[in-house]
Image 1: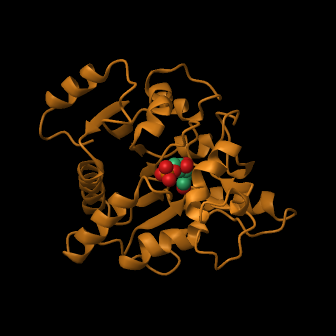
Image 2 (image 1 turned 120 degrees about the horizontal axis):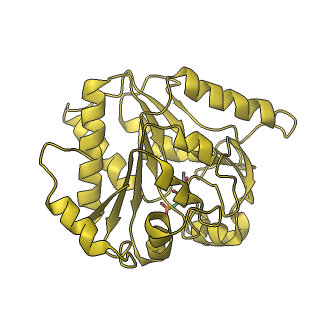
Length: 263
Ligand code: F6R
């Protein structure tokens, strides 16, 4: 796992956009795994900027979202399908239907088949080349809350009180408006991606980041499964990295890294 500590989200976003630009230059039909929430927003802004400057095209690329709330009306602005459209997809040149989201709006009877179909769609697209991730303060990635199977696939999950509190800021501060359930890619699904790129900022993520990078692999801190991934990059600001035991070593590794080596 590579740990990259940067001064702030602009520097983090620039490094991740470089990586995506390189990927799309080499493989224009690459499959991107897209996260929502606040952590990837600076990356999306930078990608939009580079697209407008003529540096990146998504015309042949595809995107798959990590998760979707259950029970929100289709037009709800905080539904992740709508969030990704507003924050990213509508501003670049994805083809119609190229960005897909897990099935948050199907009946419970249809859900198992719909989740299996989402897994199939990812596999038929060739699998995710680069998966963007944020992390919850309780250590979730996508919405795999503590206790999730480390081998899980796309399915319905119940959000923890902590996650609903953390996400109330997107719902006018009202925790009662935050859905209780979601459909999320599983940890096994995420681990199938070829490159995992996780971004975290702020001291509220510091303990989760310490566990992710330096803790024991455990369903109690679901993101720790990333320690088993052959190509995982964790980008942090100073505050998110403030509880790392080996922070000095990660900085030294980065300083000594050859220029030609990407993330
Ligand atoms: C969102 C997602 C979540 C968020 C996490 C952190 O698609 O999968 O795991 O990445 O809850 O959220 P932010 O970035 O808002 O702190």
